Image (cartoon, rainbow, N blue to C red; front, side, top):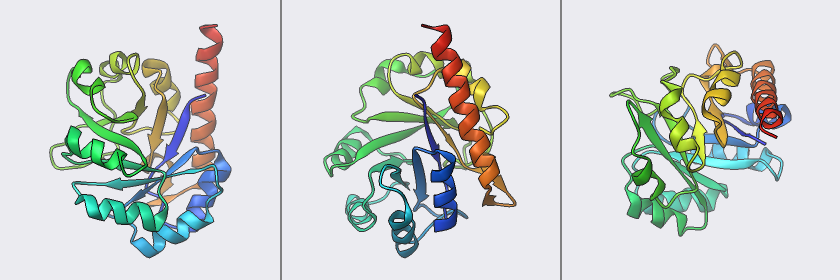
Length: 213
């Protein structure tokens, strides 16, 4: 079954709504931006979540000791690296005992062999924008992602919404999907949009599974 992550969670209410919508994971952003959460708030969100919802900390080029402190303080299950982190850094974070997800910016064909060699559990594919580290709210050419998704775990991101996630799942057949602005109204997570997103992603995945039986 496809996994669904709702990123940019900023308070306990949104976290619980995401869990009730059926999300497998929530993203807590520690990098600067309008969805950034501080340590105290992240702890409160983490404590409110049900035990089987994965807590993912999103960081950009953080010192390893800072990442270690976030993992220990918030009890993160996974860390999503959205900067220029190299393979050695990915390995060092993995050795801290968490799942590592590395973001990759898609601007053209992907080097499948190189990306498969990274010591990470999954790659998150997002739309390339020179001045942004994700959160563009724009899709990329999904055909570029399909070869990599056939070779390893890929999380599809970038401009997804309840209206287009089914098409993204059908085009890429990813391990998971990730959404933030696509389930917001006026910058806040909307429970009905989150439910619709999860339902659409799961329905599309179920159709593909049935077709390929």
